[in-house]
Amino acid sequence: MKVYLDVCCLNRPFDDQSQYKIRLESEAVICILGMIETGDIEWVCSEAVDLETDKNSDEEKKDRVRQICRKASEYIKLTDGIENRAITLEASGFGAFDAMHLATAESAHAEVLFTTDQKFERLAARRRKNLGVSVVNPLQWVKERCR
Image (cartoon, rainbow, N blue to C red; front, top):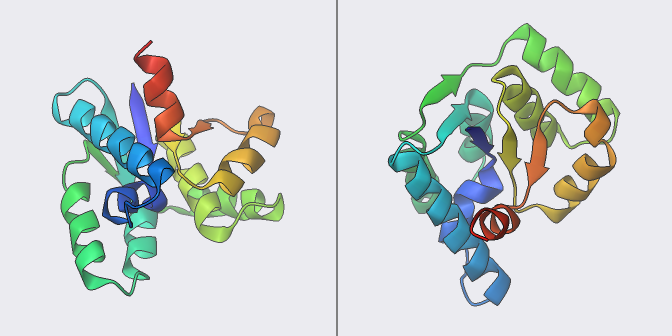
């Protein structure tokens, strides 16, 4: 199985853990990263992740995310095709980076794009027929996977 993690997922373990939901999502992301390390799943990272991570003003968080990204099995550079697909996705209501992550995950033939962004997840659910990848909260995916 090939997966894609967006930047909010990659940041989740470094967010304020005082909220129960954030702690649970952090554990789910860590579980997924563990599955990547053991080779149970493949992780596709991308230039879009790098570009969004670079916008983070928290240098420590930025460095930690960059370190995690080194564990990716595959790295996708942005192409004209990805950028054109992202423009189409953005026109259908997705934010610029969400559209880039979707377009990249689709081009890499990822089965799942993980996000902790509820707004992104809800919009993707409404548009799922037009997407080539499932957008899922990591906590939900881990709960379903571990039944």
